[in-house]
Length: 87
Image (cartoon, rainbow, N blue to C red):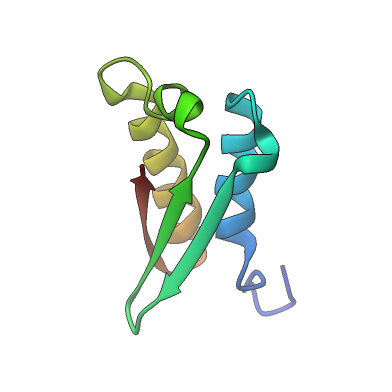
């Protein structure tokens, strides 16, 4: 974080990338694309087809947990961010 309390622009992207890489069997195939809007950033997460279930989890619990962490981190940065898991 810089002196004024703002983290660099890619910190949320890096956070989701790190979490996803820890969950999957093919971490080199984890890709996160950030689409920035005026109010909200959308993070698109892509993983290998065989790892999709690992990032979604049973009944979507893992995906929900990742979204909760992202919401907490983005709130601290005074931003709004959404996580989309793409097939």
